[in-house]
Image 1 (tube, rainbow, N blue to C red):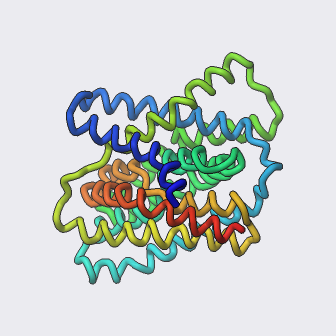
Image 2 (cartoon, rainbow, N blue to C red):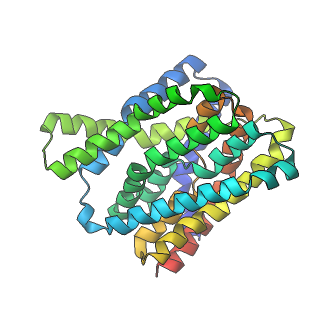
Image 3 (spheres, rainbow, N blue to C red):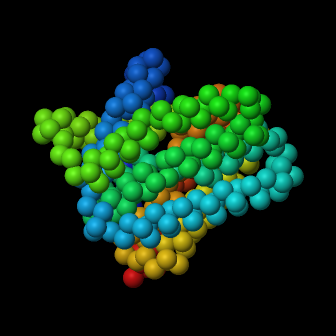
Length: 311
């Protein structure tokens, strides 16, 4: 257990560094925004493109892995929709607020997942996480847009937001990486090296930005709903993904990687979607903050349990 904690500690230290830098205002808000944009449009797509382009999918059971991710997501979305009425009765939240709960349940932070895979696993685990990102980016974004648009206050903007999903740099990076990988086209070496250099910046920059995005002052009404969402996300979702993997015969690092994908906190980009489509952005910020703080303690337990199941 201690070994797992120590392996994860650098990941959370970088998140804490980002939170600390934001609190002391060493960096102006405009500069944080610029860092977020270059990370979103350049560094993270470069990481995904580089990883997928260089992945030998023959080394992992790719078809069963993809199926496990898809089954897991379908179950998670179904559970989230079923819990709508219980959440409204228990916490007295509106439909726009519940759309943020659903996002907090469905999304996962790929930066943290990849960083964990890099620290505790082999290249095969990193590959499974990268494949998960490639497979899940489009359905997670579309599901989130449709749910927030349906439950939020600005459903008329759905079409425009779906166009933004189609232009998502992560999805574009995924598509290019897959096209290059399966076509066998070799990138011009200097281009490939430049993409690799950008990809090296992605994880540390992304973790620092996760920390900077945390909100430590949150509406009192949001705390209970955010905490309940955190319990569901950090306890139930890893079990769903690991169960799907186990049921399909996946073992070893493939099963652990799926469990890790479910164990990480939700992604901060859902905040922008909640704000733009009339969801509850302050509640979503509270959900991200509570999940990120709790994940430091829950992820080691998930990894330990998944390792036992993986044989």
